[in-house]
Length: 258
Ligand code: NAI
Image (tube, rainbow, N blue to C red; front, side):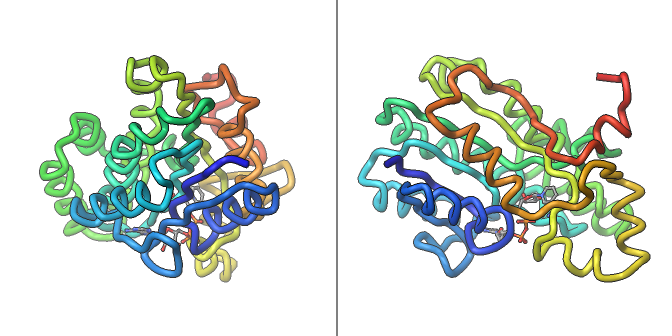
């Protein structure tokens, strides 16, 4: 039995992952805004600090794996606070407890949106760890209307995939024996997409952006299975990757351009 920490555990991909891991006999420390063992708001520094402290307490100082699935897709600046700093700061705070495991693993949830048009200035601010500047740029985009505001989402996901790639080979991660990966789902049927997928117009928008010729939209458990493998003891050498679980969307959109 391993001890897992799963953020975003109250809904969608996080909930499916927590359920799958529990079914397989693991202990899961759930983290979410509400309805979790650790209730905290990962959009603020204070919320992250309390999430880290409560998670360390619940784990008694040893964590085998963390799966960071909490996220939002609102066309607003706080999207980058949750999707980027709510992941990176939280993970960094748990590194000491991960080091206590004999097989520590981490996986985060990026998105196919990481490949979409984004704000390079915002991605740069995120990569430099400057949350004040990132929120300033994100706020400007938000104020310019929903189309510009949406850039907060792909920018947060581009940055988190890039962060995984940069960090995975450092002393803190590879040096500590911790594989660090991302998954990038296509369109998954969860609370995040339910409204969009309820109308023909919304489905068309989703399918134009993320065409899925293999098996179409997925259930959350499909993503959970890959997250479970990436964070299992079996994964000793996969690191720094963003694994697209997208029914062929990446192959359709990028073709030979890999
Ligand atoms: P969801 O809306 O069903 O679940 C997200 C969970 O994150 C919720 O339980 C929510 O309370 C939690 N959360 C949001 N803000 C939080 C905060 N400030 N602090 C703590 N918890 C917070 O969404 P879903 O679809 O399960 O999304 C999970 C991840 O998958 C997200 O990172 C999302 O960007 C990503 N994703 C989802 C796709 C989809 O089609 N549903 C596609 C690609 C990526």
